[in-house]
Length: 110
Image (cartoon, rainbow, N blue to C red; front, side, top):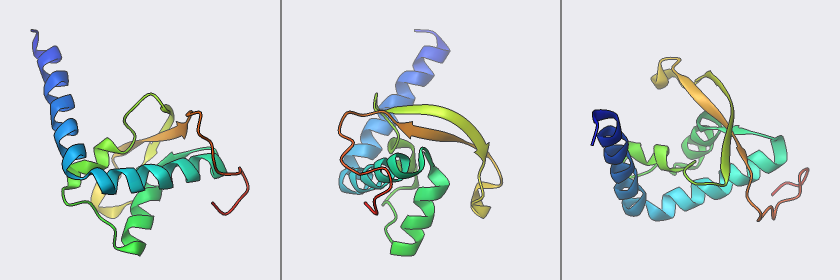
């Protein structure tokens, strides 16, 4: 296995583990992300961090944030600089939900 392949494999293993150990939190954040994406056309980690901070709903492990947008239902549609001060203006992805279970009305309160 090449180093790049090994690195990708190890990343996926780490995300699998952190997702399993933060399963309920990840699913809550995914539901919030789905609603935001359907209502506004896109969502990013900054949007979810605002909600998490406001509701005091943070993961047990910080790496759980990386598991929220995993899976075939999400598509990267852009990138932006994070507005979260602790992110030091790093580039983050902007996502769009592409799943079939669009239960939320586009302009509803969700």
